Amino acid sequence: MPTLKTGGRFKSAVCAGEIMVVAASGDDVELTCGGVAMVEAGADAPAGAEVHPDHAVGIAMGKRYITADETLEVLCVKAGDGSLAVNGDLLLQKDTKQLPKTD
Amino acid sequence: MNVMMLLEMASGAFPDRPAFTDGERGLTYTYGELFEAARLRAGSIQAQGASRMAKLDVSNLGTPLGLFASAWAGVPYVPLNYRLTNEEIAALLKRVTPAYLVTSSDRVAAFGALDDVHAVATDAFLDAQQNQTPIEGEWGMDPDEVAVLLFTSGTTGEPKAAVLRHKHLVSYILTSVEFASAPEADASLVCVPPYHIAGIAAIMSSVYSGRHVIQLPNFSAERWIELAQQHNVTTAFVVPTMLARIVETLEARGATDAGMPHLNSLAYGGGKMPLSVIEKAMTLFPDTDFSNAYGLTETSSTICVLGPDAHREAVASTTDAGRRRLVSVGQALPGVEIEIRDDEGNLLGAGERGEIYVRGEQVSGEYEGKGSVVDAQGWFPTRDAGSMDEEGYLFLEGRADDVIVRGGENLSPGEIEDVLLTHPAVADAAVFGVPDEQWGEAVAAAVVAKPGASIDRQALKDLVHDQLRSSRVPAHMEVWDELPYNETGKLLRRVVKASVIEGL
Image (cartoon, rainbow over all chains, first blue to last red):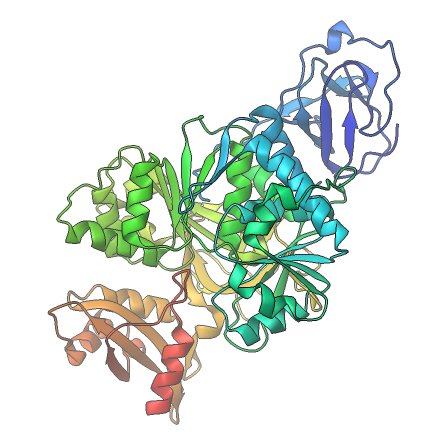
C-alpha cells in the first residue's frame, strides 16, 4: 500500500470503514482493516475479501487509534466492522480527554 | 486533512440535526443541508477562479457556509472586520485578490468595483437557485494547505494576516473536542465576531461535537438573555465586557438569579475578567459551569483553560493564593506546552514574570509575507506577559510591550491594576509607563470611579505602597469616565497611555 502520510485517507477493503492519518512516522508499514490491507480512498477495493475473525471488533466514527509505540495515529471518519492493525498488531483506541467547553 | 472532513463526519452521523440558526432571521441549516450547500458554494467560488474567499458581514448562515465552501474549493477563507472604514477594508481586500467576496447587499457595488474582486450579496450566496453548479471531486487532503487568513487587530502599522493551515485547525479540534459528544438538545449561543479566531473555533467545535449553534449577529445583553431563554441555550462563550453587560442588565432588573437552569456552561476569554464581574455572574448563574479560556489567533484559539471545578475551588478558598486562581487562565490543554521566559530567552521558574511561549500542533505563529516566528524547537513567542504557579496555572499580565521599565526595574502593569481594583471606589484601572527624566519611565494610572464614589488619589497611592512596593506607586494618576476597550474586551492600554503622555 502507499506510504502513510498525515492527511491521507484510506478505506477498508472489507467493510465501510474509512480513516484519515493524523500522524505518521513516514516508515513503510502496512495498515490493515479487518486483516486486509486498506486502499486509498479513491481507489477500487479488491473484491471478495472478508473481515478476519481476529480483526472484527470494528472502528467507531470520531475515535482515534494509535500503535503501541505511538508512531502512527489515525482518525476513523466512517465506522466499520473491521479492526485496524499494523504488521498484524491491533491498534489501540486513544481517549480524548473531556475538556470544559470553551468555544 | 481538511476542516471539511469535520463537517462530512457530522453530516454523515446526524444529517437531520439543526446545525446553525441565524438568531435574527430565524433561518436554519441542518448538518446535511450545510454539507450540500458547501458543495454548491465551493462550485461557485471555483467558477470565479478566486484565490481567496472573503466574508465581510455580520454572523449569519453565510459564515459557516463560507468557511466550509472555501475549504472544499481549496482557497483560504478570509473573514474581514465589517467595522473598519471603507478605505481600510479596500486595502485588506487588495491583499487577497483575486477574491470571491460575500458581503451585505449595501456594500456589493463599492467593493465589487475593485480590481479582481467578485462581490456577491450574502442573500445571493445563501440562495440555492443562484448556486447550482456543484464542485467536482473531493477537497484536498494536504495538511499544509491554508484554511484561514485572519487579519490581526494590530494597533500600529499594517494589520498582519495570520496564516492558519488545515493541520492547525483540525489538530485543535481533534485534541479538544470529542466527536458527537453534544446531546441532541444542546444549543450554543455564539455572539463573538465572525472575523475573530473565537468565531472560527466556535463553528468547528460545534460542528464536530454535533451542537446546534444559535447566532447572535449584534450583541446586546437584552437580546443575549432573550435568545438564551428562547432556545434553551446550554453553552455560550462571551468576552468579559459582554458578561459585565449581562450582569448589569440582570441586576438592573432586580434579578437575583438569571433564570437559566438550562445554561450548563458559560465560557469567557479574550481579555481580563474583573473579579467582581465573575463573582456576581457565578451567583446569578448558580447552575452554570464557568470556564476561562486563553488563546490567540496564532494558536488556533484556546491553549489554556480554567475549568469549572477550579472556579468553584477558588471561590471557596480561604487563602489569598487560592482566591487568586479565579483570575488565572488555568492550565495548558493536552498537547500544548507553555513556558515563561525572560528577555534573553532564559526559562523562568514558578511565580516569575516574563513572556509566555507556547508550543503544540495547533500553533501556527506564521504571518503571510512575513514567514513564521516559531523557533527551531517549535516555540511561539506570544508577546503576552505572564507567570505560572507551581501547578501550571497561568496568570496574564498584559502585553510584553506594556511592561514598565523604571530605573532598570521591570514592573508589570497588571499587578498594579489588580491592587487598584481592590479599592472600593475603583471600578476600572489602567496602568502604564510614561517618559520620566530621572527614572526612564514612571508609573502612571488612569482610574474610573464606581457610580457615586469619588477617587482619593493619595489613598490609592498608599494602597499600592502598602500592598506592593514604593517603586510601583503611580507618580501620575488621572480619573477617567471610562476606559477604552476593543470589541473582544481587551483594554486598549496604549490608547490611554498616548492620551496621558500628550497631556503631560
